[in-house]
Each structure stands twice: as C-alpha cells, then as structure tokens.
Image 1 (cartoon, rainbow, N blue to C red):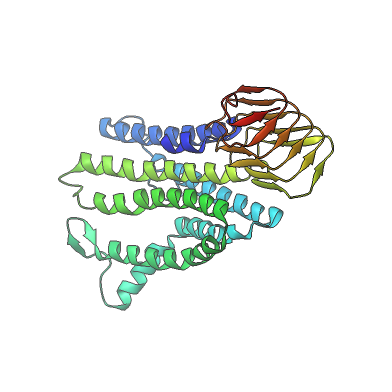
Image 2: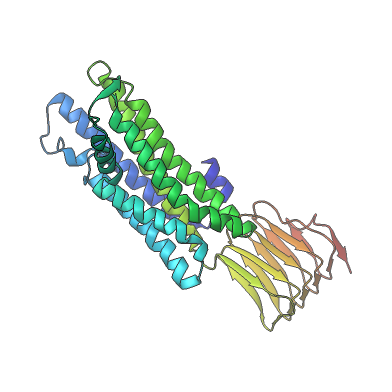
Length: 334
C-alpha cells in the first residue's frame, strides 16, 4: 500500500485498482475452495482444474491474459493517439508476455534447445529443480534483455517525467519477475510428496502474487491515460477566461498572462506555475504529486486544499489572501 499512497491518483483510478484486486481475491478464494473441496472429497464441480489459479487457460489465467491485453491496448492508445512513442518498447513487451502466457513460448523454446543439446528437459538436478527450469530462465533472460533494449533507449532519451514514469513501470515489472520467476524457482526446492502443504502455499504465493502484480501494472498504465498525462502552457501564451487543468497528469504553466483564474485540481503528476500574470485567483485542490508556485503576480486569492504534499515555492506577489495550505507559503503581500 506504500506505493499506492505515494502515487496518490484520482478516485476513479483507485476504484479501478480496487475492482482488479477484488477480482484477483475472488479467483484466489475459488482456488482455495477448490483445494479444500478436493481434500474433503466434496463438491465435484468446484474441484475442476479450471478453478485453480495455475491452470493454463483456466478462469484465473484467462483474467491474466485480459489484463496483459488491456495494458497493451492502453499503451498502444497513448502511442497512436497522443504520440507518446517512448511507450513503444513497453507495448511490445506486453504483447510478447500475452502470447508467451497463452502459447508457453519460453517453455517450448527451453525444451527445444535442451533437446538439441541432448539434454532431457524433465531430468532433475536437485529437489524438483529441472534442467527445464534453468532453460526457461535462460530463454526469459534472452527475450527480457531484447525487449528492454528499446525501453532503455527511450529512458535515456526521455526527460525527467518520462524517467519517473519508467521507474514506476520498472518497479511493477520487478514485482512480476519476483512472483513469476523467483518464487517459482523457490517453490521447486520443495518436493510435493514430502512437503505437500508447503508446496500448495508456495503455488498460492507465486500465482496469487503474480495476479496482484499484474493488476497493479494494469492499474498504473490506466492512470497514465487519465486526462492529459502531461500538459505544458508555453511562455508568452495568453489565457482569456483562465486555465483549468483537472484530473490530468503533470503540467507546467510558465510565463503566461491569464485574465481569469488558474485552477489545478485532482492531478496525478507534478505541477508548476511560475512567472505568470494572473488577473483572478489561483485555486490548487487535491493534487497528488506536488505543486510549485513561484514568481507569480496574482491579483486575487491563492487557495490550496487537500494537496499531498502541500504546495511549495516562493517570491510570489499576492494581492488577495493566502488560504489553507498556502497560508504559510512564502509570498509577498501587496
């Protein structure tokens, strides 16, 4: 939950996350119910393999496929609609993950390569760790490095806001890798015959954690499409009635003459209003990633409520009142 509190997005985005996690919880509970029913030998229908969260093409896995598809569509929409070409590498990665999950690409390639070298993919090394497992890790690393190359290029060429977005995406990806690869490998250290309960717990942590990680990734990508992810009002612009940026992402308003008000409300990214001439009020409400207010000349009031963190800055000329969170802001009253 620390990640959620740090990002702090508009309510509709949080609601989407709750929906995704609630669905994950339902599938996890169905899996547990199926296992308990099997242990007690009751309820033949609920014992069906389709209710297990690790069953390929089962109902839980199908939900995973849907999330990967949604992520790809959201990224593709931002690429083609808003010309955010730096997301291209991520879109390619998730379409690969979708096909890999459906068609077991890395498992099949691992078996193929091992057989070419005359090694049985089913041969175990220790516990339940097989040559196949190391082959799958090798194939995943190969494709991972290949797919990360365009992402790395976009990161190097991107500005600070692009890099911050990539930091969150990489964090979500590492969470997926942890549950999808590392916990799977740890799980194979336990024999099913001698550690049956531990084995089941390991599977639940692995696949359940992978579902939750994919939901967080899907949710975060969705938040990037909320409103205008990044807006910039360039130097020398003039806003007749005022400027309103609401339920968007990051924004910069710099060197602008505004006859009316500037209103920044419920935005998820970092905001700044600098060196502006404002004929009306400045209203800053419920923003989630920081607001910088500096070197502005404001004829009206400065009103700030429910921002996390509180707005910062200084050297503003304010002819009206400073209110709420902006009461302690360093300004010059005229």
